[in-house]
Amino acid sequence: MSVRATVLCENSVYGNGGAVAAHGWSVWLETPAGTFVFDTGRGDTLLTNVAFFGIPLADARAILLSHHHNDHTGGLLDTVRAMLHGSSRECVPVYAHPDLFKDSFYDNKGKLGFSGLPHTRGALESSGADFQLSTEWREIATGLYMTGEVPRHTIYEIGDLNLKHYDKAGQIAVDPIRDDQTIVIDTVDGLFVVLGCSHAGLINILSYISEQTGKTRFHTIMGGTHLGPVGEEQVAQTIAALHELDIGRIGTSHCTGPKVAARMAHEFGDRFFFCSVGTIVES
Image 1 (tube, helix red, strand yellow):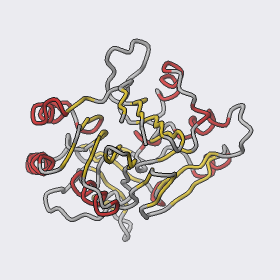
Image 2 (cartoon, one colour):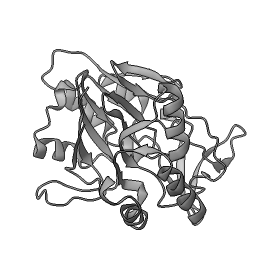
Image 3 (cartoon, helix red, strand yellow):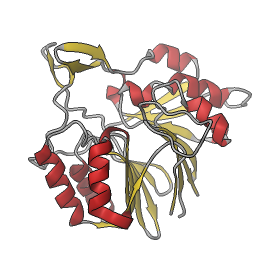
Image 4 (cartoon, one colour):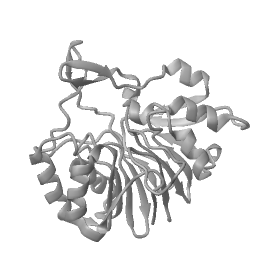
């Protein structure tokens, strides 16, 4: 199975004059099982870049969402509408976790800013979104999987303590972001992994993928690692653990941050690449 992934939304853009960068993440996935939109960015750049790169958005089989944060879901409403415009189909399948509609916040020195999905479920469904919600590992199309909730086993993958939500008691607390999901595509050369933000912890994610697939060869790993906002211990131990895995190439984006991305470029040499708007990765 061959794969072609084109980055549509990311924090940076290089060498693609006319494309637009903004904090967020979205990838156009072309696979033998069809085309898919993975995440939709913050909402203000996706359709501009779709037009710039000539992406046939209406051909996508479905939208896949990594988690509920607005820098991954902000463009959802516009994407659904664009996919249905002039189309004979009545709805767009949207694969996500049930926590997609939860409220969450970013704690900026005690000031909480809303970071959840910026659209109501009603508005999305009335525009044609057909939500397929699950917490489980599942095969979306032949050879293409979503992880569902990822078990957390590593001690050092603590995550971003500034991300908050309402706990069961209705109090503001650190959000474990249970809805964090990753895309896995099985290819003849190994697993092609497209990360969202890796809130579950990159090593937790890769370990779970190997557990579910029975495979340990990662042809490609690309996407957000969320190593930018976390502590040095998590960064150092994650990089050390990555060196123990069979990885053909690894590319970082978005929440990895420039300092950690540069560090990983040094660590992994020719196996490393930067993901920015317009980056194309093929298997």
